[in-house]
Length: 321
Ligand SMILES: [Zn+2]
Ligand SMILES: [Zn+2]
Ligand SMILES: [Zn+2]
Image (cartoon, rainbow, N blue to C red; front, side, top):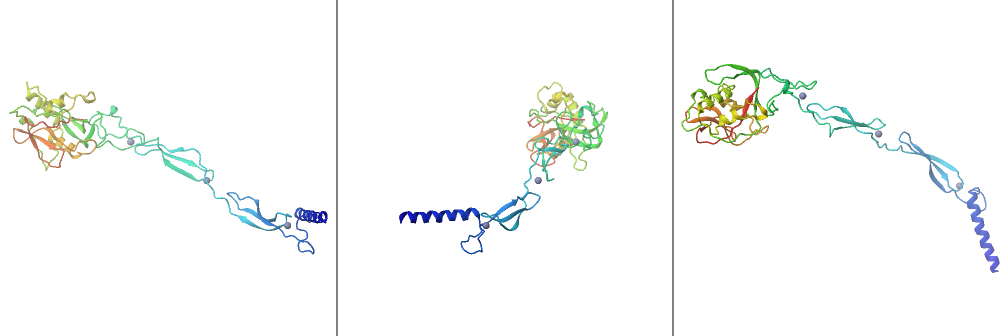
């Protein structure tokens, strides 16, 4: 009996295996039956361009019972290398672009093709010949306040039609040339006094005028020369002498600005590297003989002066071109 029972169990197991392998033929028929085992299987994979298809398929017999779509794949751009789209200009950095095969394009500001900056190329400029245009092709910007002048200093006064610049060394010499620019050196000379006690130079008495605040522009170099002559045997560091002796950028035409020239520099105090502290000498004598004109770069006050022999004030060399 034991052997018979075991045989029955083996026969039943074999029967189940056979039905499993051969499928679902008997479904709906009489006797032993099985059911389909439906699974959705991908029959056409989705792409970025088109939907795919899944088919309801019996895993046992392969019968099918309908289809359904699979959504298109979401496109993820794959970009190529960055290439230059537009070249750098004087004021704008280069722009770079990169593209995906789908046509999508990205742009960015170049991290290496920085703005070129204007190129004035002062070496080919003639002093007083008008405003200097940028020498780079296609750029028509002219050099102005805050730009770098021929000596590497800071342009602080610009007149399109030019101003009369006094080239003489004495008050009687009224020779002038046309100039368009004043340029300040980038740092001060040594702080100094203006002259010895009792030093009077009436030929450079030029009081700042609020109604005509540029009447003494163009006088600074002649003032400086007149003061030097007046100093005579005095050899101490004086404001005018320090400027006249300056050789910044190898140039010997530096001078102590007149009161109105200094006023133009004062207008941009705190900008372009111009200080916003300290009192500065001009080359203009003030209304009283003991004093010379100054500007205080710490404030906007118009009128100020210092005692020539007593005050050790700041000195800034300038030049014209
Ligand atoms: Zn089936
Ligand atoms: Zn793409
Ligand atoms: Zn330019």
